[in-house]
Length: 465
Image 1 (cartoon, rainbow, N blue to C red):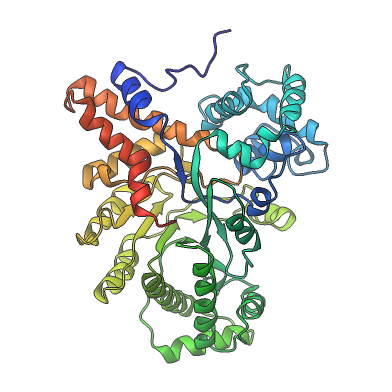
Image 2: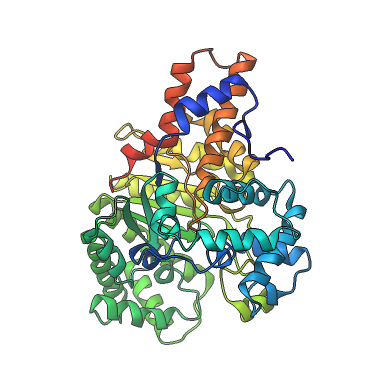
């Protein structure tokens, strides 16, 4: 059978091919947002088998397997790693037209030189082949990153993290820059049942007894300073939407104390607290010169029964239809009005809101920095061909795609880096098709520079790692 992943994969004409091979393919990768485990990088782990690096933690695959009727035993349960791989392999032929089909075969080819289409018949042979490869020094975590030409990457850590593995990496001779992003969601989501418990952990990390709103701010400032000392220059927030409700300092302190004492907090009070803490954080990020990121629009943990059994981030989330525009505008406007709006990336999960986000960023690009406020790449359910194209079309139509900082993996897997190739091929084909139609000039150098900027140089200049 002819190889599925050919050199021309996703490239539909000569312009697309020239753009990809001459201006995109060989550029290094700056992966400015992911969920890799820094311990695995610091210790240069060799995974025991393909299931440990490819299926464990991958809720994209888990959702597909559940849809096919695969028992949870073979997904997150106590089945052997080989049995889990065989269950996934049996599922793969049924993922046609889902991005998993593309990603699966890109990853098999790029990391392990496998051109076969994965199925239940060849699963055992492929499992043994890859497991043997994974024991070699070239296929350790660091080796896998080097294979994909990664120049720098940024993991995501809670404010309570000690960053000891990042410290170890900073002292090592590893050629790839590994940084971290500050993720304070647990200090923002006051409606969570375990919020008070988390305040104890955060206070312990900062060496501050958190018993008032001011002491919470002091603790967060302490941890931001600690992260900054350890090379952090980005933060990230995963929220339904940006809250904005008028408040007074006295109201916020009372709301915070009520929550710590176990009282029920009304919805308006929740939004007041979130507004206050996000504005405090936003001003602090500006002070430190960080880039702030907001991943907006996920409706999480929909299946309460399975959430109780397996916990969060196990495949029970979907796209939400939250109201975004007005509160996002007020939040950015408040920071901008104080001249304390730092570089900002907003990511949208609901494609119906693409134009809202694409136009919102233009309100706060003030000429001080190229692409200061960014409409982030399609993420989670939208980091596939159709989602990427819709995001880029909205950005092109209502902003400047030439200033776009491009792709990121947002992944927990060391085998996800071909998603950058996937994005680059989609990008080059998008421009190449319009060149062929005469909608863009037949100027390969002009278009090629734009492609190179989006794939690498814009991010290189935007982020301070």
